[in-house]
Image 1 (spheres, helix red, strand yellow):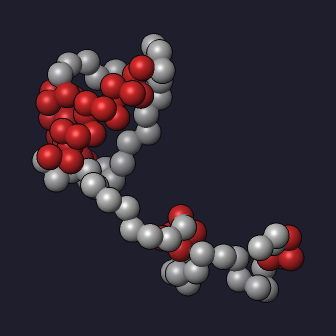
Image 2 (tube, rainbow, N blue to C red):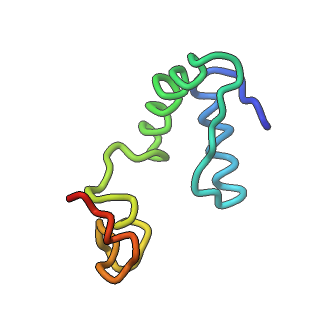
Length: 88
């Protein structure tokens, strides 16, 4: 794991440089010391990335399934075995 330490601006600089150099489209975060690590990232770094236009400020409507699959549906197709277990 790589640990980034610094001001929100310094952390954002480093993340943006990785994106520019490698074409990354996201990061996986892990808690290193305390739960505050996540809170600090959310409260300090994400707003900085948003100011720079490097992080979304709103989400599109729809489920993850709808965003990932070309069929563009929020539910399993009726022909899928899992569809028989729907509660709604």
